Image (tube, rainbow, N blue to C red; front, side, top):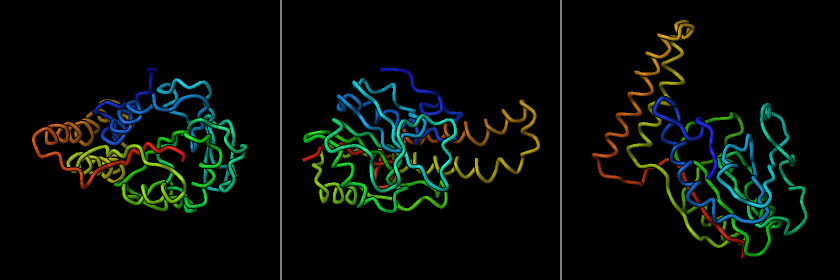
Length: 236
C-alpha cells in the first residue's frame, strides 16, 4: 500500500488523532475490495488514493455555494443532484465523510447505484460522533442501523459494517477537539513562538491523546458510543 500524508495517518500531536487513525486503518483494511474503475465521491484532496490499487481513480465533488475547493484534486464536479456519468460506469465507489453533508442523501443513493455496475462495491465512512463542521453544510449523524436501512432501500446489499473507535477514544477525541477550538485560541498570541506553541500542543493535544490511548487499553472496549461507521456494500 502507498503512503498517506501525516494529516490522515497522524501521530499523537495531531488534534484528530483518534478519528483519523481509525479511518486510516479501516480504509486500508477494505481498500482491496474495490477493483477496476473507482469513483471517489466527495473526493476533496483524495487523501486515501494511495491505498487503492484500482485501474482508474476519478474524484467527484460538489460545485456549489459554501464549498472551497482550493488545493483539492477534483476531476469532475457535480451539481448536488445528478452525477455526470452514464449508467454502469464504475466498478466501485469510495465515499468518506460525505453522507453527513448530504441533505438529499435519499436522492443521491439512487445516483450512486445508477453509475455502478451490477455487483460493484461501495466503501462508505461517515461519523457517528463529531462536532458540527463545514457549517451550514452539516446535516446528519447516522447509526449503523440507519445506514443499513437506507442502503438496502436503494438497492444495495450490506457486506460488512464496522465501527471505528470506542467509547473511551470517542470521549478523548472530543476533548482534544474542544481544546483545539476553544482552549488553544486563548493563547493565540503565544503561538507566534515555536517553543510556547510546542508546549501548549504537548499539554492540550499530545498528553490528552496519550492518556486516551492508555485508558483505552485499560478500560473495557465498549462500542455503543464510537467515532465512525464503515460500511462495505454491493450493488444488487
